Image (cartoon, rainbow, N blue to C red; front, side, top):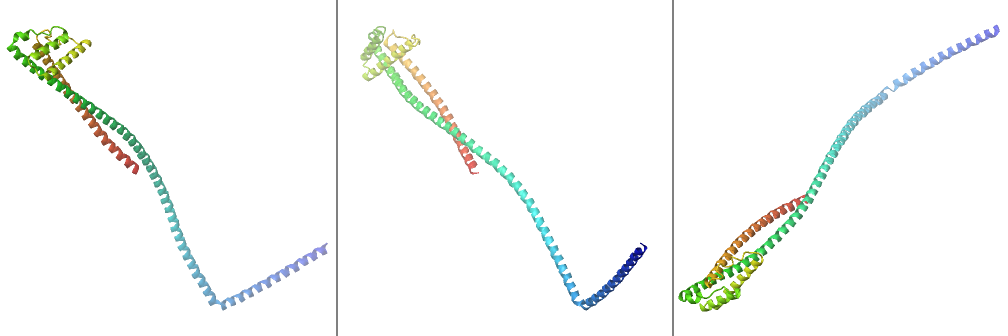
Length: 305
């Protein structure tokens, strides 16, 4: 066992010796290689310097280009950022503008619809006023024609009665006894007409005037009878129906003059009322026509906007 141990120790020593020699040999080879390399570099010093200079220039150029590209990139980034912000602002502005325009369109549409309704209402009002004015004018024209006809008849009757009374008074002055015997107190209407005919014949009253006078007497008598049927007082028909013929004719003349006055008063009132109504309707037509023109202009403006 001791022999084996000694032998192992001997082998380890031999191995360490060999390793030390190998390390020395390696170091010696490396030093020689370095010396050889240094000699080679020294031989090529000028070309390598040029290469290094070129590499330095290239490096500076690359760095400069990189800085330029970085600057350009920063500028592009800033432009994109500004463009994005401006775009967002433009979108917000456009959105608000669209909302305003939409509201304006709704408002104008509503205004146009309202104007259309007002125009329709005004057209109806104008048509109604025109119809009322036309009808009132037709009625007034008929009233005026009736008035003129009635006025002419009453004026003619008053004139005829006035002349008849004048003639009878002259005849009574000539022969009062004869005419005083003629009375209207018998046989009612027929007796009065007969008495009038007798007096007028005796007084040589013109035939045409006699017919007018008798027609007037008959119309007055008929009107009095109608008043009696409707309950009107009959006592005021004639003050002297039972008196002489002159008094009867004078009563008729007085009544005819009263009717003529009432007729003219009624005509004045009717004419005044018509003028007031006409003025009111014409003012309404003028105002409605003005309003319609304004509404049409407003509607056109709303539709064009």
